[in-house]
Length: 393
Ligand SMILES: Cc1cc2nc3c(=O)[nH]c(=O)nc-3n(C[C@H](O)[C@H](O)[C@H](O)COP(=O)(O)O)c2cc1C
Image 1: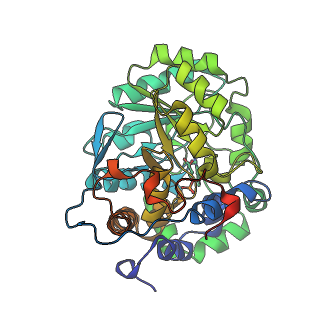
Image 2: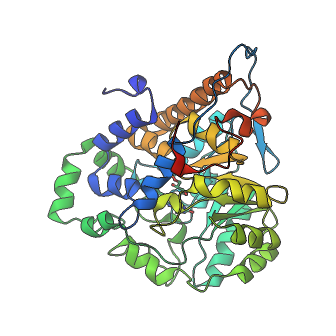
């Protein structure tokens, strides 16, 4: 399989991206922290949720449209924040945002993006969501929030699960830095990926755009981990959510909730939504999979806040599973960035379309026509509390 139009599933896009993107960046995208137990559990536990085949239901008219945080969306999917997206493809954030908007779903620009808030706002048709990391310099955090407001971002996603960065072994071994260091190994690797290299060289953005020009905040450092280590505020607490609520007048989402007690605290602190997430298995290795944490959290706070979900989504069937277990919509990280690495905007569009078509077919085969009909009834064994240990029957 060599061409985008032959890509039948997300795994095909992954294979294409692997061929095009230099190894340090591809491994940055793939990796989980430490022994990658949580990374693997995200996928294994999702796949183990069995769907309930139903027949002889008239499913001739179906609709994947829904709403999230008051916004009408074409399917229950949001492109989530992924750091350094613009290193997977030139202008990656702009291209991913355009593909999301063309498909009628939200795009979330992250704080450590290559294209800045203003770059993206100036290049796309409609506002996007913005993800915030809280840095030690609160004046700078305030200015980021103001820039997101000036760009008319309707939603601010506060990431709670990265007060410091866990280690990904691949990034250490690859000495990942932005822009890429020009050591012999990297130069050789880039020479083997000419399409990527020529694209990035022809672009004007090679550092973290949101930080450019801010005194004391250098974007051009030896390693990403080192940079994060010096800038991120480990004192982040629920008081900061209240501080942010005062600064931000749009919708506020707290991302990185994996515990019922934290979900309650987020709702108490005034969040409009939470994302049940373990950062794609990139932070606490050994934490439960996101999907195993979802049902209890949705039961507890689902009537107070919108419950979004991410971690391991690679197909429309996965989206169906997460919705059946209490999510209103799913964020995806790697799935769309594989598309971006494979073929830029067209690759992201392909990733979204693959997931949309899989969701649509799976809705039909579980006998549901609308998103609000997706409940625990689409799961085999829906009457038992979801338990990944049981595995499929
Ligand atoms: C390469 C990479 C970079 C990420 N960067 C960020 C980030 O800057 N901010 C953030 O809140 N989450 C970040 N995440 C986490 C994603 O938003 C999301 O939680 C995760 O990717 C979901 O898992 P999935 O990749 O299996 O879909 C990143 C994930 C990956 C894979």
